[in-house]
Length: 136
Image 1 (cartoon, rainbow, N blue to C red):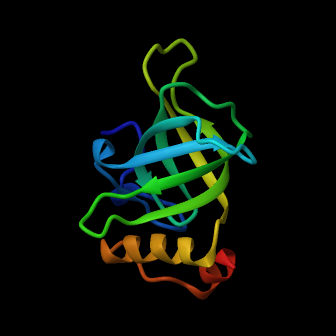
Image 2: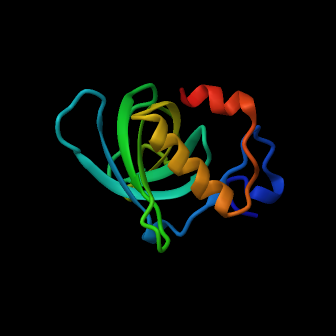
C-alpha cells in the first residue's frame, strides 16, 4: 500500500487526482515575493490543495504562492496562494522534501475554474455549489 491515500481509499471531502510527478511543474515563492524561488513537481491535487515536492522543505504554516503547470495537451496552468500544512519528508532526508499545501485563494476566478475543469475532465467529481463559493 502506498504511504499516502489513493483515490480508492480517499476519505476527503474533495477527491484528489494523482499526477505523473515528472510531467507536472510547480513554481513557488514566499507570498508577496516578486520572484519564484523554488521549482518542483506535483504528486496529487484537489480543489482544496496539493501534495508536491521541492528540493528543500518549507516550514509548516508558511504562506506561499504557486504557479502550477499540469500535464496534458491543453497545457493547463493556474495560480494560487496557500499554507504549507504538512511536511512528509523526514528532517534528516537528503532528498527532495514532500509537502502538503492547502489553497487559501486563487489568483482569479479563472484560475479556480481551470483547475476545476482539469479535475472534472479526469472524472474525479462534479462541482458542488459550496465549493464554487470558495473560489469567489
